[in-house]
Length: 212
Ligand code: ADP
Image 1 (tube, rainbow, N blue to C red):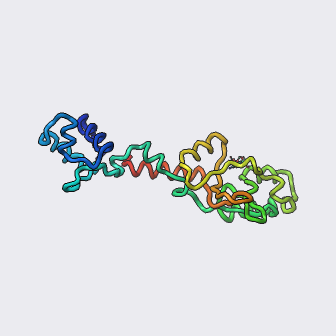
Image 2: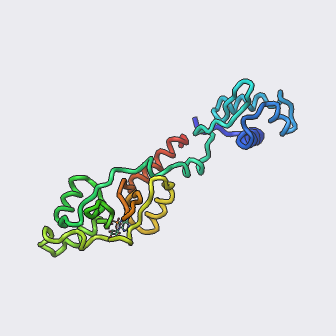
Image 3: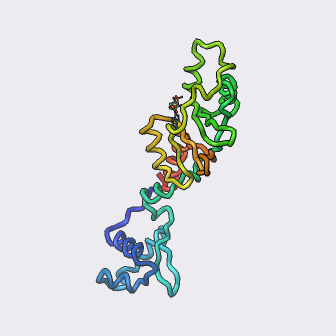
């Protein structure tokens, strides 16, 4: 069964309860200049469909359930922390060769580079590693800090950021991943990773939660 279609009066009731709930059936009727009896079937439908909850002597309130939650509300409720993956970090001193090995071993497309204090200093993408490998036989002697994209040119995010803002950054900067960071006195600690795959998974969960 697809999402249920609400009629105009049911939509009005929903708006009233969203803005004023908990509210009694009597008061909803008053606001609409209708009798309580006229509203009864609409209230029953809204309650059965899960848009409203009813409590004796308290009244009706908006359930906030997925059926009633609008899409834009759900989108803004998706936060980085709910979709982030574990970051894979390497030291600035490791060689390009070892970084490539690490990328295969951990099955990721982006590595984050940290200094001795474990603070973020760089990013390595697949193409960064490919570029430095082409025609270069000495990649076990080149440290990654020579080829990485470095601070302050790194795009990052925080765990409480809306996922939508991260999606926008990924597209605008034409990159595949962002480190999730926590601020420290001397720099940024890497605590997570958000990639296009995480955004795709979030997109899918949204569709599932809205029965699309
Ligand atoms: P690929 O180069 O494998 O297609 P990306 O599109 O992610 O992967 O990377 C493109 C370039 O942007 C690379 O040089 C990489 O170092 C850099 N880059 C990747 N992620 C970031 C980031 N979060 N902030 C800044 N630069 C990044």
